[in-house]
Amino acid sequence: MNKKHELMGQEKITKLLFQFSFPAMIGMIVNALYNIVDRIYIGNIKGIGALSIAGVGVVFPIMIFSFAFSIMIGLGGATNISLSLGRKNKPLAELYLGNGICLGTLVGCLISFLTIFYMKSYIMQLGASASTVQYSIDYLRIVALGFPFATVGYIANAAIRSDGNPKFSMITLLIGALINIILDPIFIFYLDMGVKGAALATIISQFVSAVWTILYFRSKNSGLKLHFHNLKLQFDKIKNIILIGTGPFILQLGSSVVTLVANNLLKFYGGDIAVGAMTIINGIVTFVMMPIFGINQGLQPIAGYNYGAKLYKRVKEALLKAILGATIISTTGFLCIQFLSKYFIYIFTTNELLVATAATGLKIFTLMLPFLGFQIVSSIYFQAIGKPKLTMFLSLCRQVLFLIPFLLVFSRIWGVSGIWAAVPCADLLSVIITFILVRRDIKILDKEESNP
Image 1 (cartoon, rainbow, N blue to C red):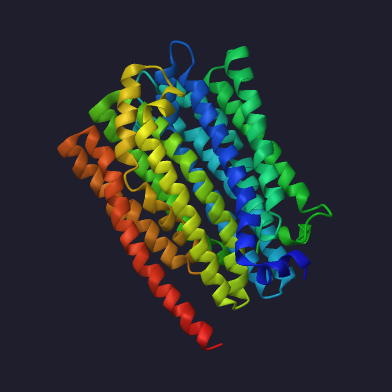
Image 2: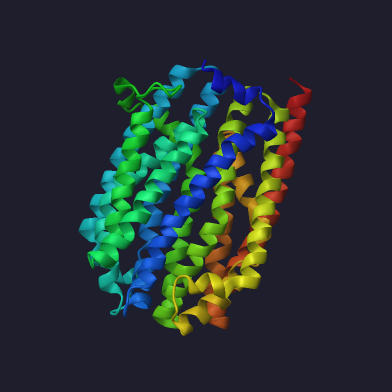
């Protein structure tokens, strides 16, 4: 067993969380930056910025849908790797690594094919208008080519964290982000490619990141190795990956459906400006949440390894300290948004109507933000310790049982304002349910700890 694997069961939890979470936070922030930079550049294209950013926002459900499969296979594989390492079974961990990467390649190629060849039949249903449909098609046609690279890159990067190398994981994200940030202005403005240039910069960065992560598992720096014979799919391994990854998958899939519903409602009640406002709001909120996702990525291998090793006291400590850090971050983000919302939005656009719409929406949209750190960390905790049904339940509650009905009902009563208000209302109910489940699970850990 590699020494860095054993340290996850011996090192102080605070130190471990910092070592694993801080690089992930930096990487996720930079990763979010290149998505935001895309939107900033697109929103500032002379003469068409407001329409082009709305057009790009329309295709987000497809991109989220593709990313849902990356998360399902990536987190499902990474959790099985961590649990296997905690049980001192390195060959099994390497088998999960190979099966995850092979499955991700096949799924990414399939989604890319279906998106490219059928996009014209459903893109208007996503919320595009006659004014924005061409921008949606131009962007999605190119971005879809990168789905296999994005999927493999995410899966391999999640496995790198489970391998006990969070710094390399951060470097991977930094490389992809920097390439995209550098190429964006060149393609969009210098070569006058518009939204096509933003899409091209994205897939080039995804390709480089995917190759970089695969090379890691063939290098001397990795504890786990990617062996050719492990790429042969095994039904029981794929079943375990999908089973554990289903919760995060449903969360992302629900997010795709929610975005689709919200875009169509925004188009109906507020037009292209409202759709563009949602695109900007999602960009800002995603950036604020990225440090919390970094904590998630740090918690996952630590909780998984220690749970597999039956070190339940360390599991509880890791969870509670991760929740504390996430709550501090989400509360800070909430205060910044409430007092400085317009300044964030001016980065994306100078269109006064779009600024006013987005500023109002952003303040309402984020009313429950201080509590979301707890909710997000708790969800990944259940996934990390091999309890995907609870993660799936929490995902379904927020996205399907609460948010979509609230969107449909509130929009009929209050129009665009009702769409913004639906989000914090759904978040409130989700936080309450999450608290009940986490409290129950901690009591179970207490019993396991007292009866070894």
